[in-house]
Image (tube, rainbow, N blue to C red):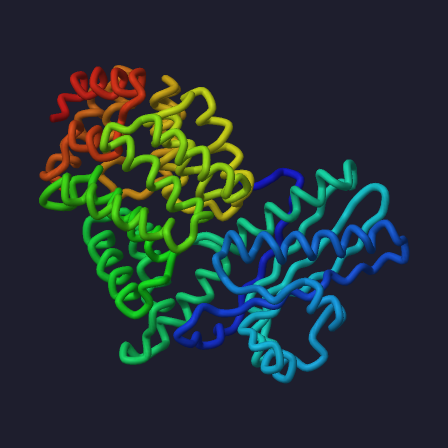
Length: 415
């Protein structure tokens, strides 16, 4: 969902720099203000500082401190020399032009070695409440850059694919694992677990990778991709706890830990973990999507799930398919079955839970033919999947959600 107040004109060009064994390092130059008004200069500095701090947190990448970058001006004097001196892989720069009616901002990502532009986006917003505008722009920029479908991940994966296999290192395996994981297919999830495990063999202290591994095991548990749901749940728990030992502020790990605690019957612990996930990931679109699903199906107030998923989609105009799968199950639980179907059709077609919720939604609307078609695909393509396996492995512990799923499953004749 694209913010109607935002005009985004993106251009992507040229190859990304090859990555070393470690994650890339970012340097964010202070946004250049093209106005002489001191108010807008302060706005540009505040926006630059916020982006620097939040990008380091949400992208999980090293970012050069803002006070260091402020001393260098608004753009590199010499890309190769500045990049080498700072030890960075990518530069981010921007230009701001504003008046009392509108603000226009251009943000660009460039290769620190060559100066080649890798990505550019333009924002055009009404200038109303300046502080709300600053927060809104920061959130939008961070969520476009960060996450498994964000600009940085896409640029990084393109670089990794050009590497010979012998040169891959921990961060490269991690990037490839995230790409496989977000297909939500059986083969993709198996490959994601293999790639994350390989990354962790090389770097056992890679907290983000432990969190993604936990998430992959959660997908294995609820979709019946593994041979034994209890083993999947135990691997899920272990990976989430390892992530939090290394980084107690990892919002993805807290979200994963919350759901696995519910699997193990600790609903109070699950709710506490979800609250921590929201505390550390309150502006992270991916975390908000995960938590929206948890509120609808696991613990908390299902009425809060729809605003959460809608906010996630506003924050990330590049919303990946799995956001729509999450939105579909939330709308199903809310009884908005037609809207659920529309969302699910934009999700991952290789994911059994998407087919399940399609069958459930059609059945709940009395569309028996469509429900039977989705149910037949589910049985043929995912013979190891069952509604009860999903309920146990997601887990579905919110009573209203549980009743809605089981009643619709009877209508759809799902096992």
